[in-house]
Length: 120
Image 1 (cartoon, rainbow, N blue to C red):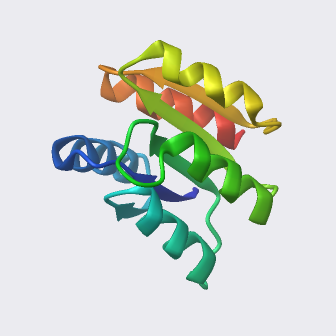
Image 2: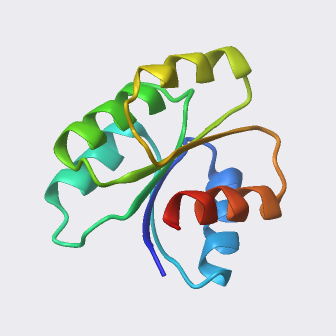
């Protein structure tokens, strides 16, 4: 199973996604914004396999976070979540092979499937 770094500024979304992915057997580290997630990613002794991030967050947004994560850890898989499909357009700048985007609102099955898709 994967070690996942989750970044979302909405506490309810964080809790639901964490619960869904933990139920799948993943280890989930939760952060409330892009800056905190970047700190965890860079300081962590734990290898992070997957970054699951909201796109629209204050400070460091999800696409910028994903770009920095990819630059420092090229093997990282990325799942971007957004309520606005136009925000996901910026993710095309990522050269990430293991990249999945999902639009909010999503079901718990959809987030599980997105993580499965990038961890195969």
